[in-house]
Image 1 (tube, helix red, strand yellow):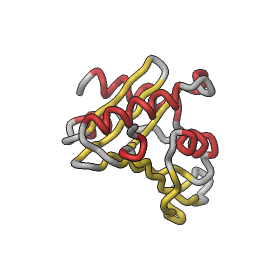
Image 2 (image 1 turned 45 degrees about the vertical axis):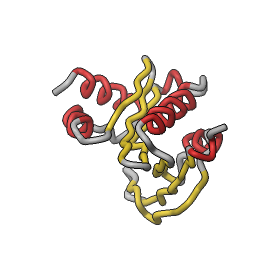
Image 3 (image 1 turned 120 degrees about the vertical axis):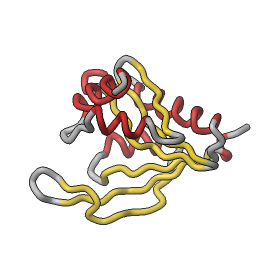
Amino acid sequence: MTDQAHRLAALHATAFDAPWTAAAFAGLLDQFGVFAVESPDGFILMRAIADEAEILTLAVRPEARGRGQGARLVADGAAGASARGADQVFLEVAEDNAPARRLYLRAGFVETGRRPGYYSRPDGSRVAALLFTLNLSARLP
């Protein structure tokens, strides 16, 4: 397992109640088109294949939130996806994750769909996943 997989898993654990394991990150990083953009306080993990890219996860340490770190990672990830030939970026976000929804809307994403009851919560409740799309070609000068 790579050092990168361990770094991403450790940081992910600071940001999520149900963190991904180093083995899960290693498996993803071994897949075609998957790349990560890292900073000391966060990372974005994406997959870019053909003309589409997907944000697999974005994590920012709680103590570093609210300082533009997420916005920088999204911008850098979108630039990386564009450099790999993507015209669009997709993601899913929990409907009850208002800070993430604001981040993606500010970055130019638009809500394009909904998956009811997609995410389960520790109390047994379920929440919808909202689908967001960013058109990279529309952002070009």
